Length: 517
Image (cartoon, rainbow, N blue to C red; front, top):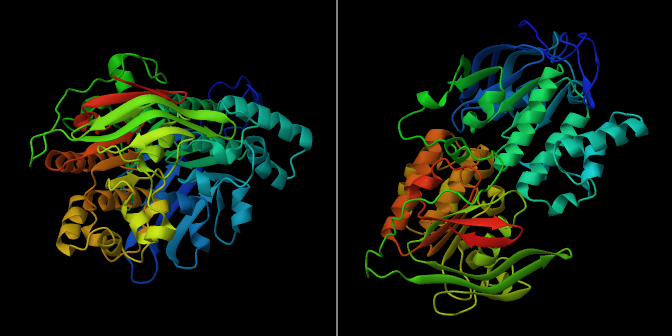
């Protein structure tokens, strides 16, 4: 077991530090011993003879390529993998010197908290305060203490306790899951891609909170691809390579050539702010390869969206053209996904119109009138071919195999395999889409968008769950498509890795209103 350390605790004992229950340095160290793990008989080992020790009271970042097995390793540490019927594994995991062997998930959950990748799949209650309180109630925490923890963690993660959880943005839901896990006051916490949907301010809030908790004695392990944003808070950074843990120290100067620095770091702006000096990418409009003319695409006139008694989108006028490749920036809850949904025709505005280049209203083809298949392929009543990468890829994967997902959008098998090859998924063509890692599912969803040959490409957090190399390759694939097709692209993102390379303009959203930079 690694040497434990705790900073910021006056007498080294337990107690409350800034409203947070602190733990002594003697608890919750992790030891992984010769761990092997695979998904079923005959399947290759994902984790291979992995041994790893994490000191108590530390914040450790777990890095690694998309699909390398990071989520699998966290699942083993959380005690879930051993109870999965199809999982094959051997070795041992010990928390505070106690082996997981022979222990139930409920017993392990008393010590280890786990925030998984998909926040929607973890939220069970109607309001933020109910969600934060729920785990505490299951642990029989006294009512007065539950109320204190709800107040403490709602404030720590900048959450409104009375807000309806289902109506929050993806990033806000991510913060709710973090708050709920921390409120249960377990000495070890595992977080799988907690920054994936967070804006810079939200990311700084989460990492700052985790750093304070580690200083108070908790053991924190964060699996994350946005390494440069989390490493300043970390005590240790390790990488999962070929199924085993390797030491890793990633600093900006050691990143591969051409890797972009986060905008906040380059500009010196506040880590959470979308400033008036936001990125203005160099103009490189692509002319249509057949006509040489920039074709008008969607136009929004007086579009308003009211949901649950408040205005979430308020657009006087916004027009896109063929060749536009726009980054859509804004804090969590600013209305970015709402804007993309209106453009795609899956959300009808309360007022105003969203028109295609010929002045026809963009409205998603009715599943009843034109069939579910047309809706899925991006057909609309206006005739504008639209591809929409949802923030949650599970919403757009329907078939039994990766290649079947592609063929549902384009019957040309050769073209489908070429795009899968470009996305690094050709070797998984016969695999089940929902069994892929989150990053692989997102790449598959992007591949289905590109192979459907859209005129309007809408991407909601395309870099989430992707490693540095994969983000670069994915954005290059999007760039090649835009350079050779009549298409406009809008990318809602908090993660600027790669997006700046293909963007020729920026839209900034604040409280449902948009301005073009």
